[in-house]
Length: 343
Image 1 (cartoon, rainbow, N blue to C red):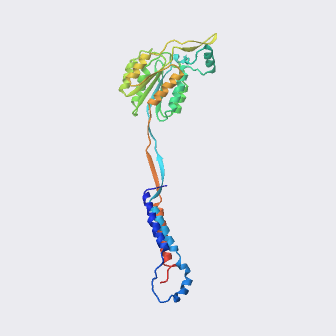
Image 2 (cartoon, rainbow, N blue to C red):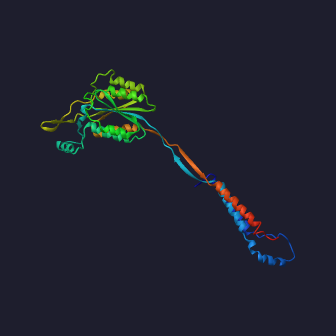
Image 3 (cartoon, rainbow, N blue to C red):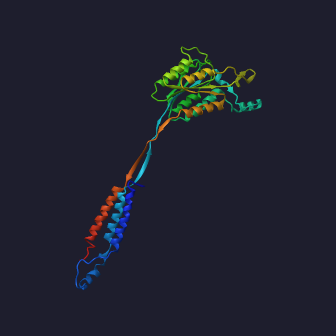
């Protein structure tokens, strides 16, 4: 409980002085006479009439009145969250090379590698990317996030949406090589920029994941697509996945084996794309590197959240004022009826 005018509670000090005076003072005779003997009998019959009950009513009413003047109230605080989300499109490479497995830098021996591969702790590039994208999406509940898969051509898997459960369900179904083996980088950038250009969000972001160099001759080049993104105020982050220490699973008539993976992404191109669009380039050597890249992007792209605060007060002063009036009325009636004094 709080008070709108707490300083009015100091009125209790003069009120207490008035109460003490009224309670302790001796009543002055209303009429001077030579003898009180004729009134002794009446006095004996009306001892109750000397009661201080009316005064108690007045004192109580005065005390409640001071309390009411200070306006006691109980506030119910309400905080309304208004999130201004970011529209994000994640473009993931689905070419065949994404089945390669990048060996973590902490693995030094073949024995360690064999153990980690058998346990399933080391996953291929596409599975690592899916896992980190899933974590990223879950950290951004207020953002509309879309998903594009690309190989030779881009395919819209999920438009920007707040239904992140549906997006993750679509993400789980992605496999390397399901839409081709080539890697066209200009296509997903142009497609993502075109979709984000229709957005009413003030901040629009595209994150491109790839482990290969551009091998598709499209009508526009990847750098031209990045310039298109810059013209449409779309920030592009590029994530190059993979290292020179990578293996790819080879299933033959002799069983399953792992061979050295060849090829890598075009780092200068990815750097240029990010620079042209005011974004940032990341090199994810392995699962740890990709995790760090996604954490950094998550920190950079912060969702704006407004928290206006409202306090709804319940006032007690009107109810207390009614009690004051009732007490004063009772005191007045008692003083002028039951406790009416004899002159």
